[in-house]
Length: 242
Image 1: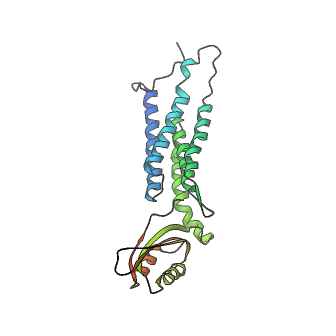
Image 2: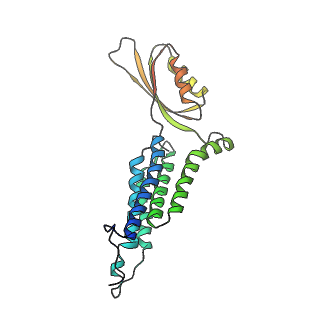
Image 3: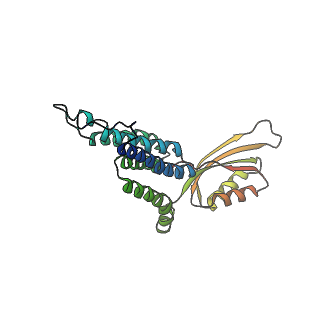
């Protein structure tokens, strides 16, 4: 019978090897994108992007080769683009879950867009378009890593990042306003302040959580804050996801 699909498990023929190579390419390219996101300490990192990429590639393989065995039957039509359209629609659930709003600031858009891009790269690999898949992966690094350097010169403040700063300091000397002034002088905007007393300490210490946003040097800010005699310790948390 003609028109039968080549089983995905049949690797002894050229088409089976090609399908496995396309899945391998999707694994490689989506892992590269996921590695970049993980290096930026984003919530969706290496594993998420890799799984999205290879799953998209597999669904494209199924779309193209999984139903051809029924083409010889009467009253049966085949439209492989329908599966591809459902992949694009379905990835929106993952992307939407990565976006959140905090005090009128939208976070997670870049990560959600990267998930969408990784899905497209996997679809291109599964669809037999390795050149386009490789080119889009390269463009991802240009946009995510190169554009912030370029736009910072054209639009001042466009590369502002948000992070959390935790400090333990001695109370009773009106030190907190001075520390906050240091943050603003260093080019950071204070988004949130939360102060907690630390019971059981003999030095009347308090713990403050500052959520900051700006284009300044966070390491230099931490060093300057720690130079104050009233500051016991300073630490920064992972940046808020973008």
